[in-house]
Image (cartoon, rainbow, N blue to C red; front, side):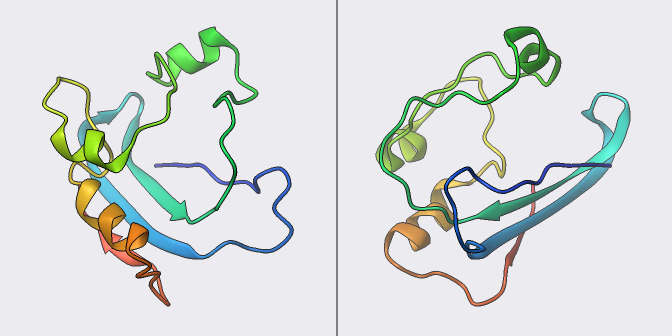
Length: 109
């Protein structure tokens, strides 16, 4: 299994841990038997999304681009790219509406 974690630059306190996802099965992540994703709510001003990984390192993680998405764009998206979780629009709508869970909500694929 793979796990990503770390603290966002400029975040002074632990942000709310809002979602947790564990998915196992063949073919989900190259060289691994599944994935574990933890999602945290971090409010920030707009910035250009770019992490510390090089373009080659991002490509090795199957990331080809980074961009901001509006909720309406996510909910209406019909392309071939996949979100994780696939129905991220539903739990995201709850967060946008101010429903921040007290304990992480378990998400499926």
